[in-house]
Amino acid sequence: MVDVVVVGGGICGCSLLYELSRYKLRAVLAEKENDVSAGTTKANSAIVHAGYDPHPGTKMARYNVEGNALVKELCGKLDVPYKQIGSLVLAFDGQQDALVRELCARGEQNGVPGLRVLTAQEVRELEPNVSDKVTSALLAPTAGIVSPWELAIALAETAVKNGAEVLLDSEVTSIEKTDGGFRVTAGSHVLETRFVVNAAGIWSDRVNDMAAPHRFTVTANKGEYYLLDKSQGTLVNHVIFQCPSKVGKGVLVSPTVHGNLIVGPNAEDAEKDDHGTTGEGLAFVKKMAQLSVPDIGFRDSIRNFAGLRANTEIDDFLVGETEQKGFFNIAGIKSPGLTSAPAIARDVVRMLGEAGLPLEEKEGFLDERHVVRFKHLSHEERAAAIAKNPLYGRIVCRCETITEGEIVDALHRPLPPRSIDGVKRRCGSGMGRCQGGFCGPRVQQIIARELGVPQEQVMMDRAGTAIITGETKGGCTR
Ligand SMILES: Cc1cc2nc3c(=O)[nH]c(=O)nc-3n(C[C@H](O)[C@H](O)[C@H](O)COP(=O)(O)OP(=O)(O)OC[C@H]3O[C@@H](n4cnc5c(N)ncnc54)[C@H](O)[C@@H]3O)c2cc1C
Image (tube, rainbow, N blue to C red):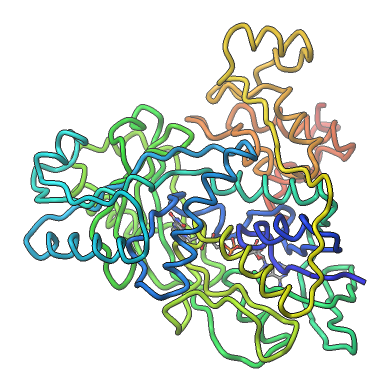
C-alpha cells in the first residue's frame, strides 16, 4: 500500500516528494514523460520572485514570499545554481511611477524585505544599459535567478535517496475510489494508495476530473523567449521587469545563472500541446525588451523557446483537499509557481497530516547533495579531480566545458537521465553556442554505454524524438 501518490514531476510534484521523503511513509511520484521537469518547469523565466506582485491575502502572496526564502535555502543545501541578484521594475511615465509605488506598498504588506523606490538617476547608476526614458523603479533585493530544472531534479534525487519512488513514462490515466483510498493506474503500474496529490501542471484539470467534481478548467497561455549567448550575459546586473499588467509580468531582461541573457515572455493563449515559437511572438518580445534595454545584441541569440502558463478561472493558486476526501490539488500554478513550490509543498504536507497521514520523521534524512562542476574548479581542484577520475580530463562539450566525468556522474545519480536533453538539464552539455551540434552524438554514445542500451534507443528528449532512425552503409559506427 502506498501512502501518497503524487501525479506530475514538475517543480510542485518534486518539491512535495522531497518534503514527504522526510517521513516514515511510502510516497510515489508518477510522471508521464521520461524525466522530471519536462513540463512548464523547464521553460520559464527562471526568476525567484520577491513577492510584491501578488495581491495581499492570496495564497500566491503567502507562498511566494515564503518560497523566495526556501528556494535560496534549498539551492544552498542541494547544490543548485542560484544567485540573489535583485530585481528592478521600471516605470516610464507618471502613471507607472504610481504603479511602482503601489507595488512597493503591496510588497511591504506581503512581508517582502528591503523594497525601495529608486529615482531615475539611481536606476542608471545601478544599470547603465537601461533606457534613459526610465522615470523610476522598484528595487527588490531578495529577487533571484535559479536553474529551475536543476532545482526540480535535485529535489527528486534527494527524495529518491531518502526512499521515495519516481515512476517515469507512467501517465496517470485513471483514479478510482476504493475503500482504503484510491486505485491509481500509472502507465504499467496499478497503485493502491491512501492519498493522491494532483500536481499535473497544464493537465491538472484532466487529472482532477478523474477523481473529484469538475471545478476548474486549465487554459494554456504561452510565453516565448530569446536566450542569448554569454557575450550578452552581463548587459544588466538585475532582473529588469516592466510594470505588470493583467496578462502577465511584462517582458523581462535578465542574466541567467548559466551566464546567458534571457529575454521574454509575451502572453498568448495557446493549445496545451503547442510549445512552438512564432515570428510574430518573438518580434513582440524583441520590441518590448528594447524599451527597457535598447542595446540588446539579438544577433547573439542562440535559442528560442516557449513555456505554457496554467491559467484557470480563479485568480489564485488552487491548493488543498477537494470534495473527494483524500484527493488534493496543486493546480493552476502559474507564475510565481517556481518560486512558490517549496512553500506549497510544506503546506500540503501539513494538510495531509491533518487529513490523517501519520508524519513521523525519519532518522538520518539525507539533506545535502554535491555536484562536480569542472569549469568552476580551481586549477588545483581540477588536477585533483582528474587524478581521482581521469574522465574529468575529457571535455565532451567544448562550448560549456563539460567533461565526460560529469556526464557519467549524472548517469549514476539516483534519478538518471535517459535522453540527451536529460543529460543537458543535469550537466549543461549542449547549452552553449553550438547547442549540442558537436557534443550531441558523443553524449548519446556515453548514455548508451553507461545505461547499457542500444545507441539508437537514446532519444533527443521525450519518447518519439529518435535521432538514429536506422542503419546506413552496413551499420552505425560506435
Ligand atoms: C512563460 C512562463 C514564465 C514563468 N516564469 C516564472 C518565473 O520566472 N518564476 C516563477 O516563480 N514562476 C514562473 N513561471 C511559473 C512556473 O514555471 C510554473 O508555475 C511551474 O513551473 C509549474 O510547475 P508544476 O509542477 O505545477 O507544472 P509542470 O512543470 O508543468 O509539471 C507538471 C508535470 O505533470 C506531468 N503530467 C501531466 N499529466 C500527467 C499525468 N496524467 N500523469 C503523470 N504525469 C502527468 C507533466 O508531464 C509535467 O511534468 C512561469 C511560467 C511560464 C509559462
